[in-house]
Length: 112
Image 1 (cartoon, rainbow, N blue to C red):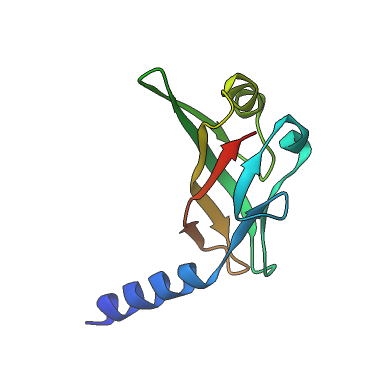
Image 2: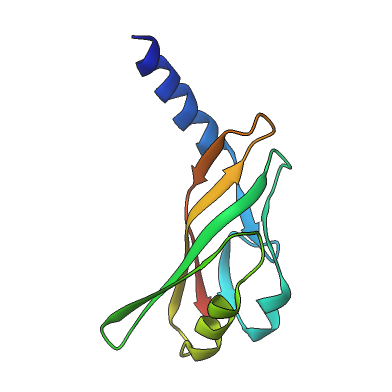
C-alpha cells in the first residue's frame, strides 16, 4: 500500500512542474530559437535529457540531448523541418534537488 501512495505523490508532483523552451510552452519555433534552452519554469530542478521528434514524408525522426540545450542533431532537425511541421519535445527528464529524476509532459511547437 505504501508503494501505491508514493506513485500517486510522484505523478501529482511531476504534473505541477512546467517546462518552457525560449520562454514558451507551445507555439512557433524557428531557426532563431536554436540558441534557446529548455528550462523548468519554477526553478524546482534542472533538465538532464530530452528527445525531439518530427514526422516528415511518412517517417519519424528523433534526436536527443543530454542537457537543457539543443544538440547539433536537434538543430539540424529544426533546419530541415518544413514550415507548418510539428516538432515535439518529449521524454523531458528533470532532476529535482533531492536527485530524483522525473519525466515532464511533452511540448509541441510548429516550425515557422
